[in-house]
Length: 339
Ligand code: UDP
Image 1 (tube, rainbow, N blue to C red):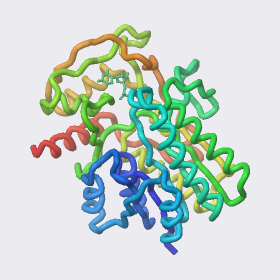
Image 2: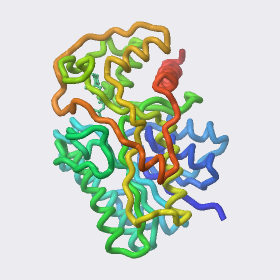
Image 3: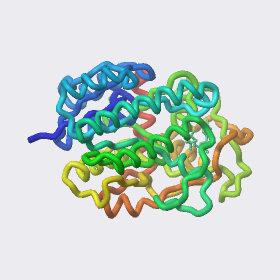
């Protein structure tokens, strides 16, 4: 019997790629989204890639009754939760909006997990590690106090899941800590769709290259790193999506070592902002307009993953090169521009 996976926020950047990989791995997928932070482009793209109309429930996960009805209507075996706000700066300006949306929606899902017995996968983030003392970071590296309400919601939701698993038999959970997801599907039918001026590096690069933005500002070139710019672990979005398929299979096939597990999802490879810009120029054969600007408040100097646990226990490994990923990001931006 095919298992059914619910993807909350399945029309977003990560959720849409995860939906495609799950469906291609043989799972039935139900997408639930309220389109509050995205339009239908990625949903339509998912249906085109998969060649069928995917089940879609338009709903808000803060509405407990709607969540209960969703679980009545579909027999869900596992749930992956992406439906959340994700802009760090906005979370500082609107903390209650972030706490209400990101925490309440997850509590409503955990209520269902408690009531019905459910496998829950939470989309966490490397932001929980703050500015790490030792690199690369393992899952045992200490979490640092969050520096934004957004980061705080990631830590709190991890704790909600850990505590629910401990208290309620029948609930199992995995938290995946993503490093920096970038790129787009090789079909160029789904990808990142930032609203307004992008906060993240790669959408800003591609929008500058296409002429939507005048110039990329590289925030800080005086960091204590080899070339003075920050280092991150950029993980291809399709590789990241495949980690979810491995995690879902691990939960559904009864392979977990403990009922609550945490995995870093990264490449293990540090790449500086300057290296990323140079790689983008080279692989796509163009010159990017950029300048050095002051450091951005809240940025850590360097962080990258030790992905050993995910490699060994999850049986997952990042496969795509930064160059392939940046070519896919550029193909997506060109497609959006109709070029
Ligand atoms: N960055 C930059 N210019 C931009 C956006 C980001 O130089 O317009 C840098 C940022 O300072 C950080 C890296 O790119 O060192 C990754 O930033 P992003 O916002 O993509 O992800 P974060 O690591 O902050 O989650």
